[in-house]
Amino acid sequence: MTIQEEPPPAVAPETLPDPVPLIGCPYKTDPYPLYERMREAGPVHRVLFPSGVQAWLVTGYDAAHCALNDDRLGKNHDRGNDRWRARASIMPEPQHSQLQVHLLHQDPPKHTRMRRYVTDAFTPRRIEQLRPRFRQLADALVDALPEQGPADLVTGFAAHFPFQVLAEVIGLPPELAARFDRDWGKVVQPVGPTDPGRPLYEARLHGLQSYIAEVVAHKREHGEDDLLSRLVLARDRRELSPEELDSMIFQLLVAGQEPVTNQITTALTALFRHPDQLARLRDEPDLLPRAVEELLRYDSAFELTTWRFFAEDSDLHGTRVPAGDSVIVSLCAANRDRRRFPDPDTLDLGRSPNPHLAFGHGIHFCPGAALARAELQIALSTLLTRLPGVHLAIGDEDIEWIPAVLGRGTNRLPVGYDRRR
Image 1: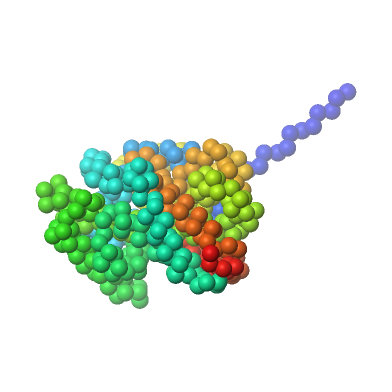
Image 2: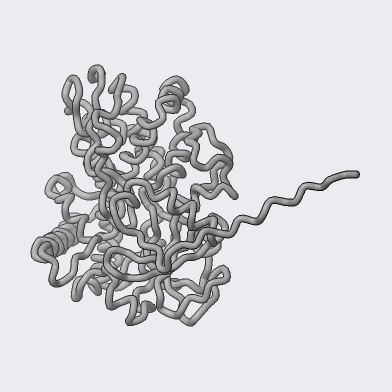
């Protein structure tokens, strides 16, 4: 007589709160346990942000890939409903209309028309030609670090290298580049009208607008064969509106450098937490391109995408989403989906294939992806080569993660090292 074992009872998906709060230090410090619970419970969840706005978050890899390519989902803020607009952290008027009509907030055909002005500046071939100059910039920053640690690699390197590289690529004159205030980038995190920080926020906003006006005036008078000059020429030919020109320069200056600063910090933090992988990268320098792809997958600076909207009530992977509600894709959650990546929580610098979504996908795939990859490769190679023994100089629990809603990165990265080589 054969006794058959009963199959184990099915494990019911975990019941999560509705909406799921994406709030607080534990979440910003390590969002991945929550993302895993959300993925296992389903691909789409209603979430609550600190501003009070509720949105629909896509967490699984397949669902994220589909959403990023779903032409029903538009990016223009005009699609947002009153419920979203009442609480959404968006720039106030008139600056919203003057600075927020860039590529991230446009749909075809306008998006297609505007994007063609920037793609030539960021082609892989052009970026490869500029690599020697980028290495010079990285070496100069390391030269300015103390002979021996400690040093803060944010203020001493990561906060400056991406902007210096960006200035070279887009044609920002050195005298103007030297006057750019990194704090202006914080205007992408609006504060409410009654917030005590509102006066400072508005001052930064006006300061950045004045700076953009200076850039436009300079390029109109001293036009060269560079991206900024071509954008100003397109405006003068009425191919771009004044608002489109200012918005595209705004996007270049802010989105073109701060995410790379943050990605350098997340990559270094991941390596410090995995000394075996750090040693492997030192011993196998040819592994660098593949290692950068894995570091992008493992902890991306672009944690969440910006808003998307349905024009009418629609089904999103079995969830009914009302028209004008915001839909956001979690790139970090998609990149840790075990259905797509074996051992997703393991940092494996030799991982291949690695079809991560750190730069998005579809028509809004980051046009500066080739530049970001080159910057990360050069930054890591330079720091690991020239700072032997580099290591985190604070406890892991003392790392300060930025409070940004959509991004990941650290405010400071104190390190020690044996000497500056």
